[in-house]
Length: 207
Image (cartoon, rainbow, N blue to C red; front, top):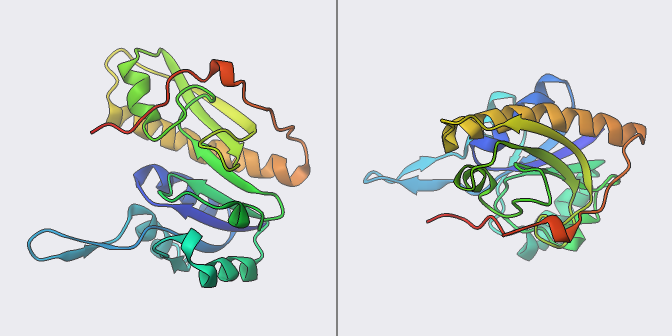
């Protein structure tokens, strides 16, 4: 199975590491462009880029995929069976989603359809959830509205913080992604439509 992996922050590191350690053929890692920070304008790599380089994986950093036909052609040339997207930070066009044979698989840090949006981990704590989890889904043009593949539950402790829950969900996401890819390739997963009536409030980004 040939995989193109798209991700940027810490949450996306563990799933990429899990794929690399399991021996999957990751033909490219796509992450956000480097940023210059601080007085010295030191160039900072994204956590996913650091992980990719540690595993000797090729890295691509398009500014905006939707506006970059040359990079879209590069994706086509890679001929991935699946594109895995974990907290990448860019919205993908249908043109890109149609490239992989098995579709684009997203790893989302909630039990969908609850907590769709950019900050599901924080809102699970704010709303006093006792259980949350991770969902893998086939991406569509909506925001976290694609058909669900697999889920795994994670308990939320009484003294949980955003940081501690983030780490638990990131670990769970890596394991769930591996099970999802195995099931997709074997044809044993039946995608499940999301029930929009159960979605609740959008997990908007906190400021």
